[in-house]
Each structure stands twice: as C-alpha cells, then as structure tokens.
Image (cartoon, rainbow over all chains, first blue to last red; front, side, top):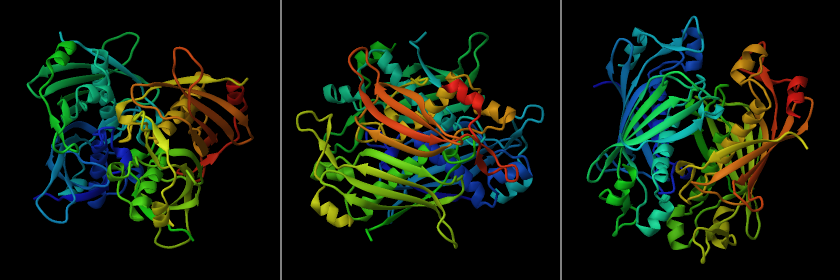
Length: 144
Length: 144
Length: 144
Length: 144
C-alpha cells in the first residue's frame, strides 16, 4: 500500500457556478494543491527552496484524466486522498480520490483524477524553457 | 468533418503561476468556456434561457482527459478549436485543441482535452439533483 | 467589541502569480468566503436554504476597499478575522483583517478589507433582478 | 484628458456564482488584466522582459477601492476603460471603469475601481523581498 496523504477543502460559494455545483476546474485546482501537499507531507521543501538548492522548479502536469461521479456544493467538506501509483524514469502517476467528508457511513466518491507529472528544471541554455529530469531517488524514497 | 468553432483567449499575468507558465486548471476553465461557446455559435440559447423553455440546466462534465504538450505564458494569444467527436444516446464527446495563435507557420499545439458531457435537467422529485437526459435531436442537428 | 469569527486559509502554489506572491483577487475570494463563514458561524443557514425559507439570495457586495500591507506566498497559513463594523437600515459594513498565522510574536497584518454589503431577494416582477431588503432584525441580533 | 485604453472581456459561465451573476473577485482579476494591458498598449514590454532589462518586476497593488453598481452575467461583453488618474513620486492611481458593451444607448456602468499601485524591483540584499521604486520618467511619459 503506497503512502497516501490527505488534503481537506471546504467548498466555498464562489467555487460554485450558476447551476449551484462546484465549477469543475476547481477540482483540478484542489488536486494540484493536494499534489504539492503530498510532497510537503512526505518531507520535501517547497519548490522555492528546491529551485535554489537543487534546481527543481516543480512537477508540472503532462496529462490528467478525471472522472466525475457526483456533484458537490458550497458548505460541504471534501477530502483529497493522494498517492503515487507508478514511478517511471522521468515521470510518475499521481492519483487523487476526492470524497465527501462524513462522520459515518461508507466512502462517498465525488471524483477521481489520474495525473502524469514530471520533475522539471530550467534549461541551461534557455532559462525560459523547462526540461523534465530523472525522478530523484531520494525524493522517490521519501514518497513510497 | 464535424462542425468546429473557435474560442480565442489572451493569457493574463494572473493566469500564470510562480513558474511563469499557465496554471493548468485555467486550461480547463477555457475549455469549459469553449464548450459553451460551441453551443452558442451553433445557435443554442444560453442555459438561463433553456432552463426556462426546455428545462435544460447545462452540460456538466462526466469525464475529461487532457494532454499537455507545451507551456504557454501571459501575453500570448491561444485559440481553442472545439468539435463534437461522438454523439451517444445520453452523452457526447467534445474535443478541444488549444493552439498558439500565430500569423504564419504550422500549428503549435499546447494541449488537447477530450470531454464526456451530458445534457441535464433537474430531477422532478428532488430539484437539487441533476439528471442526464437524452441528447435532444434538434440540438444534435444544429451541432453537426 | 463586536462578534468576530476566524477563517483560516493555506495559500496554494496556484494562488500565486509569476512574481511568486498571492495574486490579489484571491484575497477578495478569501474575504468573500470569510464573509459567508461569519454568517454560518453566527448560526445562519446557507443561502440555498434561506432562499427557499425566506427568499434571501445572499449578501452581494456594493463596495470594497482593501489595503495591502505585505505580501504572502504559498505554503503560508493566513487567518481572516471578520466582524460587522456598522449596521444600517439596508446595508452593513463588514471588515476582514488578514494576518499571517504565527505561533508567537505580534500580529502580522497582510491586508485589510472593508466591504459594504446588502441582503438581497429576487424582484417579484422580474426574478432575474436582485433587490436590497432591510437587514432582518433576527439576523442582526445573531451577529452582534 | 489622460490616455485611456480599453480591455474587452466576454463573461463566462464559470465566472458566475450560484446567484447567476459574476463572482466579484473576477472583476478584480479583469481590472488587473486591464492594468497590465494599459501598460502594454502604451508601449511597455511585458514584465518578464522588463525584469531582465530594468529590474522591474511589475506593479503590485497597494490599495483598491471598487464600487459595484449593477450585476452582470455570462454571455455579456464588458469593456474595462483604464487610465492613470494621478502620478506620485513612488505610486500612481489607476482607474478602471467597467461598462456593458452596447451597440447604442448611453453608458451602462457596472463597477468602477480605483487602484493605487507601485513599480517594484527585487531587494538587492534579499531577492525574495519586493521594494517600491520611483516611477520611471520614460514610462510616465509613455502613459500620459
């Protein structure tokens, strides 16, 4: 069972659209926050430190596949449970399961996202360009 | 060749993150705008009219799969080209190709999203609940 | 001393702009969340209930005046302290003080916003139009 | 009459809240875009160029005072008209008037924002810290 971290969000009025439910790009926003929270909870320093010490700018997204099962609305608390499903030489797959926080009862799955991400650094010749780098072994070890 | 509509966006400073590139949930936001723009350009009335005349609340997302190929930053103009790839009885697949607007040269693809959406109405017994409805034939005809 | 409620926010990577600091409209977003949180913490039902029971759609903003004193960045926790500074017949002034959450030391004020808001209902003749209503006495009593 | 630039926005579904009107922090977002658009239309290079050539990181906001007069909803086009109302040694006041775009008829003012901003550079001793700098004379000349 891989290491799994939790990220809690209270849905706000302004996160919802005229249909009264969460405007879906906000789920991508919360999954992105959960992705970074995963690394911080595993013991990594924030990107603004890592860019200075190791040149790591962040873990931009290469691909995301999200399935929406139920709607959610403001005033509700949701929990994003995050783990890394697969490590490859230069990319990894991070999975986010978003459920409604509940005092009792079974899991109430709202949506699930599978992200392919890569650690990147700035290109030596062109600093405006970001390049994928091999997944650092020490970071991988922290996150398993 | 299915009907394809264009939706142009100028990327703003606030759309970008500390790495200087578009914060990716904004692409979902622009694809959602392009999805609605597609229907409006095909001749549909806005949802706030259709909810009154036909009970159609909108076309919420069931699934989205996006691949990110290149980064984009503020000051750049992008074009979202949208078409419906497949119509099924109760859902349809809408594809959004996001390219950099350029005066000349080949297409510069930034990302591509495949969305599965459904037309929904409010449940008769519980108006807080949204239900998928069959794709209306007249709407399908307008969009092909 | 008027009733004051607290609303805590962890600043996310995507809340920050290419300068690495919070993109300021997010402070407006957090103040709006704090405004609603104030009413919920004071005992009001959410708007989607109040619109059914009493016709109250919400408390849209008429005016906001925000002063920014310090920058904040992702990974930091901030606290929005909210109170109503003045009740008038049809409007009220809500003040939000945003400080950095700290274990010790004095208050670290990041920004402060003064909002003028009104309770609104839908116009009887034109439901698309929102109209200010007198501040309900029972709600005022809950919030003082 | 000071130089005034226009910035046009089409309001999207996701820009609106459960009350069906624009979630107000989006107006701050559009005013910020209009602020930068003003400088670009006046002939300035984007910040990512100016930070390299002149050390100018941007023009962060010190204060904003916005009055909301009318609501707006998705599908509507709005125009943000921007000018600098006052130049001081280290700050300037930028005014944004947001009106509904209309083919004919008088101006339909939705909201108006007055911003106090400053040009900033990174502190020589602590690059994480931003410092206000005197308004550059050549930039002021371009914008009048």
